[in-house]
Length: 539
Ligand code: ADP
Image 1: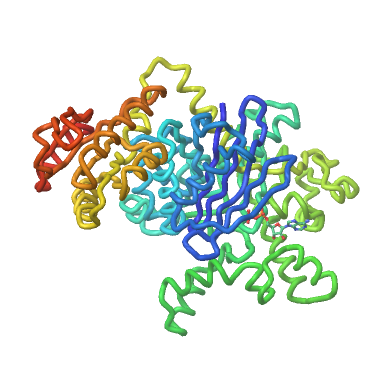
Image 2 (image 1 turned 180 degrees about the horizontal axis):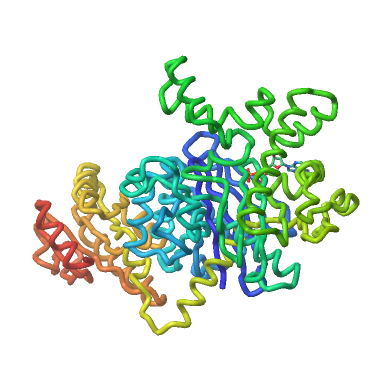
């Protein structure tokens, strides 16, 4: 099984293609700066030289299309045909209370993901664009949504309800959700494997310390508490996020400086944390370097950062009733012996004792006390791919029919072939409003090429142009191109005002013939007549 993992941000699409039988990474990369003239695609295949090229990508759909082109490119692709991609795993940031595990995407699921947009107005919309683009471009692959919040849905109300008016939770679902769930889940499972113990028996605290950072208390394999909340801004001090603060502080500054909610939100998320304390540095390597050369503010940032992690470990050890294993992961957790040492200093009373040499080399096991201390690289994309495989694996085992397959909810595509821009505009407006995606070819030759690119559900052929025999040849060519393949024939709807055409029989200077098309409308075509006919032909 080949699983493509897509992680769509506001202006980027990160991708990784895995072969799941041996969890081999086949290709990876990122389309970045989508929507800007600097849009670029970075593409890497393990063991070969990667490359970066400038591309035109106005939106997520174009970017994903470019990714698919690369993956199936005859020279540097890794699949012969994109049909070899069996499934797509979409990272979705917020699943609200609806999603407690990864799910196969169908129409109902997609609309529920859209409902969760209000919880993550910056993050969910690009995730949704990625899903819609994939349903459109790769309708044959199964699509699975994997949520950052889902793992934490096992938290009990005492862990997730804020001490705010209860109606805010009851009516508006304002509560703690937690994030980084895929990573906390993945590293806690790996920790159990490393220790060779059943996860059901373990009390694990996982510290995901990257630019974004959170801690999670995992009991018996389930999240019982985590440091991020309604949004990722709660909890630890992060690269640019403030983490826990007295909520009166932002209110006070808003009042004094006359700031709008969006402005204070920007400060709390993008200009606070390590960046805020140091006055401009959020990369921990720089902070460590400057702290070592004596900068007070950088030393302070490091001390505040590590103290907060320590506080959460203490709190979660109390919640768990002890700790069997402490896990460090993500950019800082995996790579900074200094941070790990500072976090663990003074935690000997919990059985946490660091082996300096092992810590210095970032070995997998760095503890020498009663509690294991592990460094486990997180791999969120592989974790998503594993989740996808397990969703599809389980589904394969049941006799239940698969819910609405993704293909049913993709937008139906119509390729219109006409040389008149006004007619195209008219078709695009009428069909677009009814929810169809409309593509346009100016000439029959271009039309033939676009049939294989667009893979339309219907072709509308306006035979007003050139002469009628060109239309005939076009329809014949589409049919004969299809004859060799396995795809089902694309219905062709002919519209014509050419007098010689009566129904599907035509007469022109080369003689009389019958159009090999499936429907006919005489021009001018009224919108309701057109929509009725299209819906009869393709639904
Ligand atoms: P995110 O995915 O949240 O953007 P990462 O998990 O990639 O973040 O972590 C980024 C952080 O990891 C940065 O602060 C970076 O400085 C830190 N980091 C990466 N390598 C090292 C290292 N060798 N030593 C210390 N910190 C490191």
